[in-house]
Length: 309
Length: 251
Image (cartoon, rainbow over all chains, first blue to last red; front, side, top):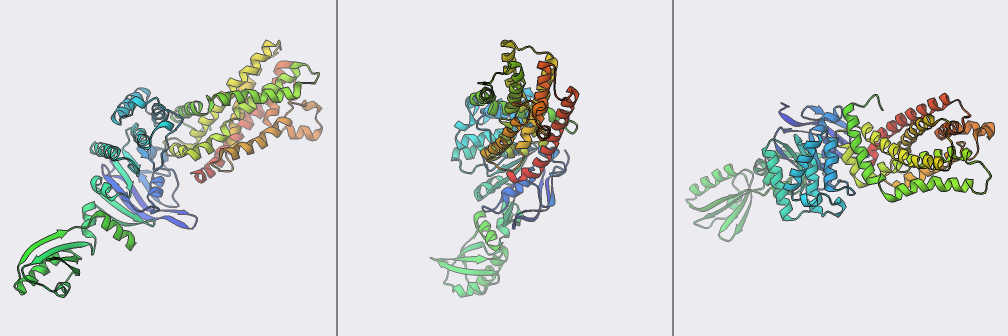
């Protein structure tokens, strides 16, 4: 498979009666990328992932997985995927082992490979000793680990993970994140939906922020943070008293709050604001005692983008 | 279904069969209910009547094959829709036809397994079977036909409530038993009764079973076979078409 893009989405749209759940969105996910799809509850994340995985049909637009149209070539596109859905959908009346054998069989994995991979995955996720137990007796964390095993048994080229660590304890979250990183490092493309900003920041090469069915921003987590207007902050202190009004009059400075012997300035763009501050100190014959740039957290940016959209 | 499904998809449908057998058909209550239901219906008709057992066995066989092959199949799709496992199957690299072929095969195997019991019981009580091969062929063909009927029963309405489907399918299945020549031979029905009985696939199996045990039937044996094949194809095609239209409403 030589496609540069693992996922290509063009003008994808989905309505539920009068509600536009996904509104004409377009984006690409590169082969081998770990891509985060972020948004608040009800933003359209799960609807998008369900269209990409062939569960529901789009009302408009197209989507393809490694060049295969998800509607017209559904069998081929789905053959390349491993899916961990938002809600657990392992068969609770089957054992962990039989769930893996079923999913492996549905993906056309032969018996010896199914057995070998199931054994290896269950050991990796610390479920091997419980392999013959019915899934109805599993905890939420164990079910989530099993879902990941089921997604990985076909050795997919792309993993779709819908809120994979939601509601899990810290240890399980860390294990799942480590394994996502491991498979991504080995070449598996990962499409991850989450509303956990820290998780996206730790894991993703690029993120898209979706709200009310529209993409509000798409870039690397660091660039998304830097590009956010009005959320860049500079902390500065001078050797002599300065009036807040003087700082507010500088170009690009939107706010100036005195905090002890320092000012916290809200600026549009950090570099331009620092240039203006240096010019100001020279003209007033001041010395800068300290200057720190404070980037906004991804969460700040997320909230701002969601608010704006 | 057969022409448009690849050998690879056919192979994958057997994993659906295995799953269905493990989850739905290997449960004690399902097996016992599959045996008891036709048996008690048979007893309620037989007790107090002075009729030779040979005339009643075709009806018992018909009811057993019909009730067992349609016992669990209609509820599988709503069950799986409710448990969200239907979503897993839909997002797997298998077609809708593959999923339903698996459901049909599992209903068929269950129907065959349970139908063996009344055949053995008949032999044990001394019933002579005039044409055993036709009986075996009839059981296989009609059980596949009834198994196909079971996925049609689950097609509409697109609910995720198994009890709704079970209630609706009972409303269709029970009247069919009474118009299919089981309790009253077709030749004794009035013209309108014969007309109504001709729309039931069970009529043709009961007639085939009657032929294979008693050596005589109302319809020629070839007609019974052709009609059962036609019913099977119709059930499969119509069921798949309806499911294709309604499956999204279940997800």
